[in-house]
Amino acid sequence: EDMKTLFWLRIHVHLLVNRHEDRLLFEIQESLAKELGFKADADRRASEKLMQQYYAVASSIELLNDVILQALKEHFVSVTKQKGVSIGNGFLVKGDVLDTENENFYQNDPAMLLMPFVLATEHREINKFSTTIHRAYGNLDKRIPDNFASLDEVKSSFLKILKAKKGVYHCLKEMNKLGILSKLIPPFGRIVGQLQHDLFHAYTVDQHTILAISYLRRFTKSENAHEMPLMTELMMSLEDNWRLVAALLFHDIGKGRGGDHSRIGAEEVKIFAKSYNLTPEETDYIEFLVREHLTMSRVAQKQDISDPEVIKKFAEKVVSLDRLTGLYLITVADIRATGPKVWNSWKAKLLEELFYATANFLQGKSLSKTMLVNNRREDVLKAGNFNAKEKEKLEQFWEDFDVGYFMRHSVDNILWQSKELLEHMDRKSSYVIYRPVKGLPNAYEVVVLTEDRNELFARIVSTFQSYRLSILEARIYTGKTGRVLDHFVVIDNNLNSSSEEKFEELKADLINRLDNQLPLQPPIKGRLSRHSKNFPITPEVQLRVDAGGSHYLLSVAATDRLGILATIARVFIEFKINLITARIATLGERIEDVFVIENPRLADPQFAAEFETALLKILELRPS
View 1 (cartoon, one colour):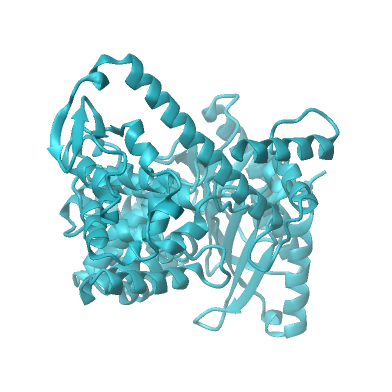
View 2 (cartoon, rainbow, N blue to C red):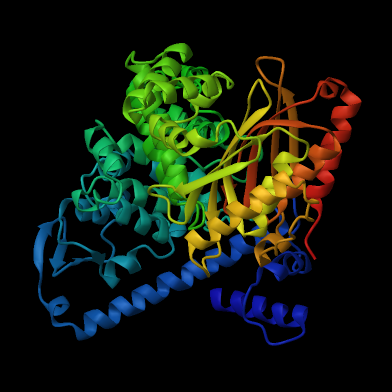
């Protein structure tokens, strides 16, 4: 039946594209789905429904192939022909294979369906199941009772698996493949094979969930400690870390239902916890992680985590170090499991900084803005061994800028800028410095010291993008006397030439463009990927007054492409928008940027609406 479905799909693909084509390409999925009668609804595209059916069929065929390969191995490999070692309940271990003396081992006791998985967590030598065990899981719908998930023995066995010291990921992966996981947690069945055409999720929801658990469980193994030592240390120190596995099982279970999937998942967790008689403390902890599983990522990537008020607000939501640690661990696992293009060293750095700042706050080690600024200034002067004249010059320069500059930079960063810019602080012409970012391949910090002028931000970002540099972060500091200190973190995407040569050329070019007021170059129109072309996200623009009331927060989400930031900067020029700072976040092929801007006319609803409309218009444009 599964093969018939594949043949049926293949024939319709050929008819649709009018050629021999055996790939379900992005560009044909939506048209194919509509031709086959799939209809979109408020929550899911037609193509997502089609692909869920395809993945169900593909998974079934993959499972059949696994059984056939295992059967061939059992026939030809001598160890599997041996009698084996009995481990009780009619089960045997033959080498690294678990076998059973009776294919109907759960006929009189449905709870025995979980016994192979329990045994796999208890016996280190077991790596796979025999074909006899695999055959036992065929046609489960007809072979197990409706009350299977509510049986006390079943729930007890499932908790044993979740709490096991080893084999948790492999068991859950196999349980999902064999269809047992959906029997234990019926809502999980709704996300099996569910695809997300959102430009940054590379896996079906169930695959992503199991993969996230895999990354989480890697933190329990000392042999993986070299990858992310802090994660391993935190995971090993956290009591009852099985709670994180449970949270990840439910974190995306609400996808595809409409509404906030985090809150839907949190409600499902409470139902699960009540059924499994979890303690109120366990229930509260897991429910919190599911409900807030996106919060830490949002704060780290979209808010100014150098601001004590941001840390205080986040800490008040987290409440305890135990919760913070759990949230940090599942956030990292979740992002890493989203897709190969989503996780990077920059996100790791932001999350680590947020973790430490919040942990310090929760342990009563937080400082006021004034104390932080004074401490950093003193530490920089002490570390730099500056003479009296140099100290006076630096102090005078620093007085031109507000506390934000010191809040958003480390002592090391301020020291580097101070030493490099010391001889250039009085010059009227522009000056540029740069250096590689530690721990982030192909990334560079670029600092521009110049005089404030029209179109400044647009000129800088258009220069970066003409050198094929992607901007990770932009911070703009405008002094009281009109001096501007702009700090950028960029990624070099085109390493055909020496980076040193490229950045020296960029430095000279940037100074020339700024000081000679060269005409703005048109934004580069980067190419869209096939995925982006066929599943573009709907651009979103949100404008709101910030907490202080003097500035505005502008949030922009759109399909990423080279040149998009320069295009946005053009709209700022058109509407005479002054940019205070920018936070750039790229999630796969989606940008989520936050700008702090000012213009008194933004208080006028009509002007604000025209500004938002202009942004939406340029975000919807596709490069030719």
